[in-house]
Structure formats: structure tokens, C-alpha cells
Image (cartoon, rainbow, N blue to C red; front, side, top):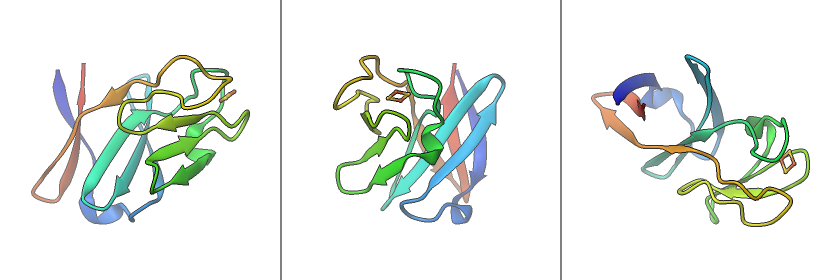
Length: 104
Ligand code: FES
């Protein structure tokens, strides 16, 4: 397991979706209030980029732009069909002004 810096904290606006690639992983980063979520960016149903989806800040979900499954940012679980498989989620932390994500 390795903590990888993905960006500076002040480069993340609240309630916007950011993209980050690490090795072959395509990651979505969302800051809501003082929490930063990191999940896989590609939908588990078909190939769609969730960074082009719709963020619901109150529900803490991102909705796929292709067939509209909403995924919980905390645990990656889809809230409605057609997606059935959860997204991978990643631990995050802030050190100094760096946003770090824990990868395998
Ligand atoms: S590709 Fe995301 S719900 Fe179908």
C-alpha cells in the first residue's frame, strides 16, 4: 500500500469532480466540505467516465452520464440499476497542503 500525492488541496474546489490517473488506475476525486472522496472513475456497468457525471453533494453520490446509475462516494455501492457492482474506493488524507490517496 502506498500513499500517492494526487494534487494540492487548494486546487480542489468544493463539490467539483476531478480526475487523476495513477499507473493504470483512472480515479475520480471529490471534495465535499472537509472530506475528500476517491473512487474509480470508470462505471462498473459499461465504459462511461464518471467525471462527466452528475454530483449530488447532499447524497454524496455521482450519477453515471450514460445510464444514470448513482454511486455512493463513500463505499462505491450503486444506488439504482443498471449498475450492480460497486466502484473501488480509496482512502484519502491531507498532509500539509497535499492530497494523498492510498493505492495497493
Ligand atoms: S455505463 Fe454507467 S450505468 Fe451504464
